[in-house]
Image (cartoon, rainbow, N blue to C red; front, side, top):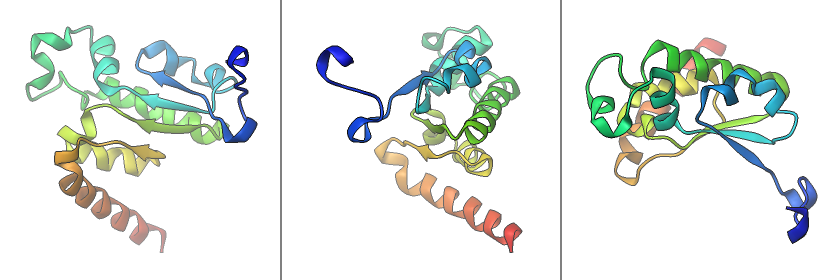
Amino acid sequence: MAKYGLTRGKNGLQVYVMAEIPTNIILAEEFAKVFDGFSIGSNDLTQLTLGIDRDSGILNIAGDNNEKNESVKDLIRYLITVGKKTKTKVGICGQAPSDFPEFAQFLVELGIDSISLNPDTVIRTTLAIQEEEDKLAGKKK
């Protein structure tokens, strides 16, 4: 980066790392020392956590072989916890929030910083997110 005149923190430049392999999450506290944020790639994270081939179509079936698997959710939960602890931003650019509005709600409940969505799911998922945010706001009163 320096070769091209880019310096982390200069002119607001932030550097993020993809959190799509379990190691990036397991060692999140170490990664947080050199990156400003994490971007979860839920498709690859699911594939690598569960040891399945994402091109086999198995991710598209209902049940435990998708991002809703508890081991995948545990990794994401841990990453967001580390992000809050280290003041490192955590977002998701994976498919899961677009496919599963309840997964987007799970992320909101954890306090994720940003969620990207496929254009055709923005309204449906935003409504689900708003529902979760309203529920959480009610708990805080």
